[in-house]
Image (cartoon, rainbow, N blue to C red; front, top):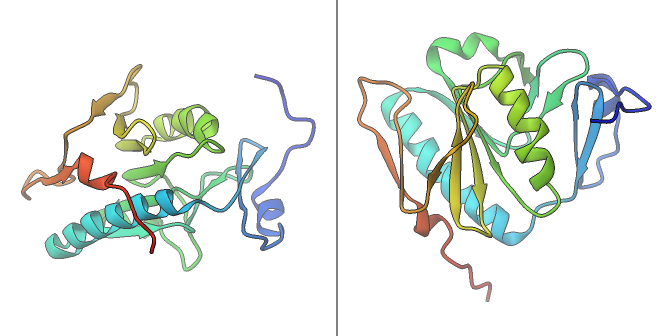
Length: 185
């Protein structure tokens, strides 16, 4: 991988213009993605409703959607589309950001983010010990689940079971329903 000619910091990213783009930095490398499309946002909203309601109902911690900063050092700031932090780990939160990796990070990929989400972010999340990293692909209509140390993902096309606490029933997600077409009228 080529070395960036300019190393960006978290402070550089926070100074970027509020222009509708998402600015992230991983080990000093700047990533800029445009505002997401309707399909991306619909899938994200469906996921947030499922996960957020499940987390609240079982008092498991906190689920949030972007923009929420996760700062993993002076040159690494990412904004997962959706994240979850277990209640026992909420001490990693400040008023502005999370100072350590979430337990679950989710990216709904688009053509402009696919390379970074499947490459640099996946490696970062695995290295930082994110328990589960989901790559949600609206084009292929599946969810990839990555775990630390995994060389390949688990692929889910029908159902996805998520159980962040062994003492609580699993959330079963109907994967095709996530990707049901939106007909804006």
